[in-house]
Structure formats: structure tokens, C-alpha cells
Amino acid sequence: MALCGMTTIYANSSPIVLARILNSSGGYLKQNDVSSIKLNIIQIRERDRIPVPNWENVSIPKANVIFDELQLDSLWTDDNFGYNFKYIFEYGSNFPFSESDRLYLATFQIVLTNNASIVLGRRIRTI
Image 1 (tube, one colour):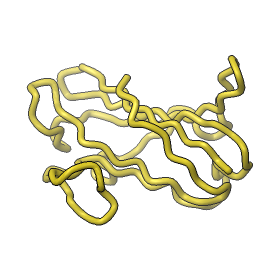
Image 2: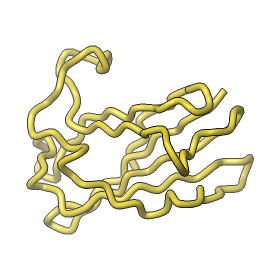
Image 3: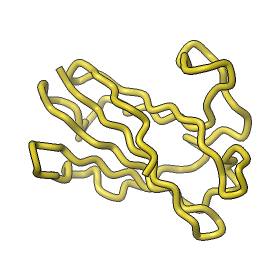
């Protein structure tokens, strides 16, 4: 699993996950490389991993999160190249980050058209 650091947010605010992902050939991942994307969120409490209700194996349309060209905007501050993956957790019913002082792990399982799999993880801490 590729772990993309940690984001600290206020409870009930919407974190954004950005990443630059390579395909199995070493090029930048494109929508045509992707068969499916599933999102899982767990809450981490000491040694326990607790699945967050309604956030297990959530299907994410690849067109909503994968860009065929690298994006470089004010959201990306890591370098001058940019990102090709972006997911925004929209606030609404079943919002997973409504309690303060919690630690979560959001994982995106990206299944490629060649059946290889990429797992992208992001820790999210609420204050």
C-alpha cells in the first residue's frame, strides 16, 4: 500500500486526497488503465481497526477521481509536476469524519485493467 501521509481536519470538514499515481508500466495512471476503484474507511483505536458504517467497498467512478493529464493548481504543493488522483469527501449524510479526536485510514483499491491492484491509503485525523 502506498500511504500518502496524514491530513488533519476539523470534525465535519471535508478532506481532499491528492496523489500522483503510476501505472504498472511506470507511466502516469490514466482512466483507461483503471477497471474499478473501491473506497474503505476504518477508524483506528489503539490496536483496533473498526470499519466505518456505510464506507466499506464504496464504488468510486474512475472519471470522478483519475485525470489523464497531471493537474497543477493551488491544492498541490508537493512539487511542480502535479497530481492525477483527487478525491473530495463531500459533507452530507453518513459523513465519516463527524467526531473530533479520531484517527481514520481511508484506502482506495484501484484495480487495473491488467488485474494488477494499487492500494492508496491516507490517514485522516480529526480535531
